[in-house]
Image (cartoon, rainbow over all chains, first blue to last red; front, side):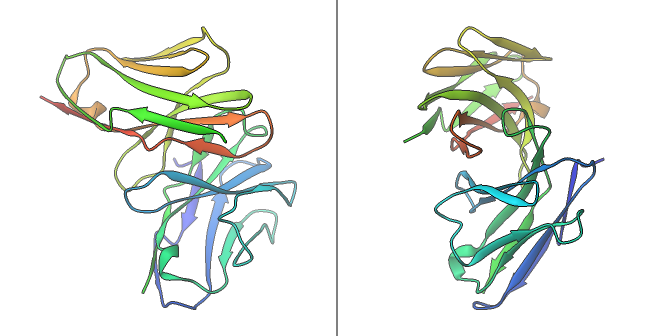
Length: 114
Length: 110
């Protein structure tokens, strides 16, 4: 049973369109993260989210990106106006405490921008 | 700037042929060093966390060790099912941003 469930598994979108990627943690933890992995490249940190607030974000996470936990369960990543270079696998993760314990990753959403 | 460098990029082993993967890191203050396994098209799967130099952890055929500058993942008598990409990552004391290395792709042939 996965620790984190992500939907959709694959999304194709046109350049300039908005996309919302969703993550549902199985257990009731407070620390959540989004990472991305461009094909053949490193896993890159995007943002960490704790107690319904962003706790840290990387330089990749610009104004085009936003995160929220609208209903206390789902954790979403929104990209407002997608670019070709946003094509990647996006992973949601959770940790029991603030980052210094193991992270449990979802299976990822493959985003393809055409 | 925090950095993680893994070597080799790829490693091909025969079943039963033990070897080691290297992770060199530079971090202002180490809060934790992590090893993950990643299968194609899947999310990283946690293996180990190491916190301080001299620490060692084991799980089945895998053993992770840590010094002040690098970590090793030793694989003893690997099997074909150990074939995967092994990722090393570090977290510094300053925040929540985990830095990943590019990984070592391990191929184990029967």
